[in-house]
Image (cartoon, rainbow, N blue to C red; front, side, top):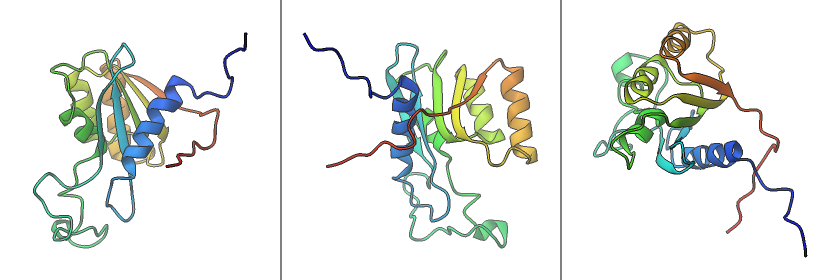
Length: 161
């Protein structure tokens, strides 16, 4: 009898892989972020990526990062975490885990808390010194949301078609 293979990915790597794969749908030329929500039974219940709301043309609205606020992407882009929440297949996300490549901003933190997500697993926190991220951490910790920075065992997962 042969034994099982040993080079399989962990659950965290699997769900973060789904988040990273989802980010590849983003049309943002600078920042691509994906998110994956998993219920306590390890079933995916929502995915999302950063982009404009449904019906808003990504050819007509701006992708700029600098300039007059109204002429940048910031008032228009829906973040991956919020899209994953809005795309969820469940009426309740209480007790769920959110996997996201980039630590959530303060606006996404509010939505995460409101829907009852209890754990956030993230890859990068490159904006940790900004007021928005400090506010996010403060709210998430106050609400009892567990924050975990994933340190993957594998540096890459290759998909072939």
